[in-house]
Amino acid sequence: MVLSFPFSLGFGLLCVLGSLMSISSCHWLGVWLGLELNMIGFLPLMVQASGSQAIESAVKYFIVQALGSSFLLLGGLSVGDYGVFWYMGSVFPSFTFFCVLGLLIKLGVSPFHWWVPSVMGGLGWFSCGVLITWQKLAPFFVLLGFSSSFLFLFLFFGFVSSVVGGFMGIGQVQLRFLLAYSSISHWGWVVALCCYSVVGSVSYFFFYYFLTVFIIYMLGGGGVARSSHVGGFYFFVLAVGFTSLGGLPPLTGFLPKWLGLQCFMFDGGGLVVAGLILGSLLSLYYYLTLVFVFFIGDSFSYNYDFYKFLSFSFGLCFVFFVMGFPFFEVLFFLL
Image (cartoon, rainbow, N blue to C red; front, side, top):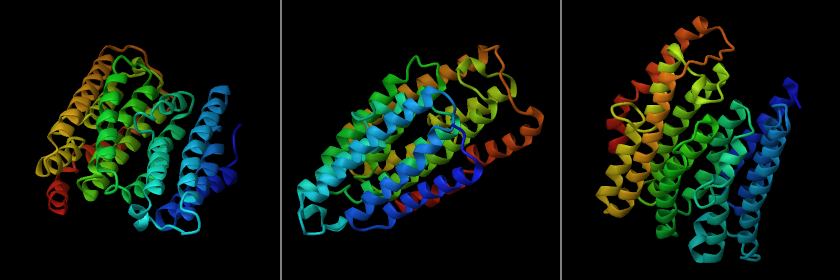
């Protein structure tokens, strides 16, 4: 099913409106309603790619999001007529627990990560990019409001998510699956950082957000599906992008991890740091393996004017992978 421009724009605006409604609402019912509007707006965009795989992915996504929403609704109903606001979550433990559980399911944090690779595998690049960036925005900002309620739970989920994302990505050649497991690993850092520094967690999220948007844009522009479909200068651009996303110093993707380590070490999170570093090393291993596959790949599948795209790629590389360093000191003092 291919939607015409007005319908695509309308559903996209509904998706954005739902996210903004959830972020700006202080009542659980407004948050739940915003997340539902966001899901309704995104589902038609998912099935724009023709084929049964896109429809299957949309159905899986709907079921998972409905499950997460049901936990949010259950948490809200558990407090009866009190009309709980987010800042009253500590007064009602059952409300907080069910809401956190529902949000973690929506975010795809391990051990609720099983749906992310399966859904991404059948989507087009645009839908994949929206799924692992914008669709995580509203649940993440809502989750920040609960970060002080279940400290151990957040650290545990962050630890497990980082390690699982690192292990499961090893040996993957499908780029969509690779980005899915990368997302799971990065969300381990984001969730664990919620307990120590809200600014650090938000900074990490937006670093990951923009790096992922850049890589998805490059992959979508080149029509690449497998790691062996890359060559030439396109190899160089994606190699830098993936190694930066893996946190290889001195690229920009290393900065959020360094900021995260500063937060953990100042507050005595040694065991959590060990798990996060292990997950990051595993992720970096399969990123470097991917770069090696790029290097030996001899299959080219471009569907755009390469030379027309070249100057813009250079500009994006410079902005995302070099210009991030001047902001390091600013972010450090904000923590």
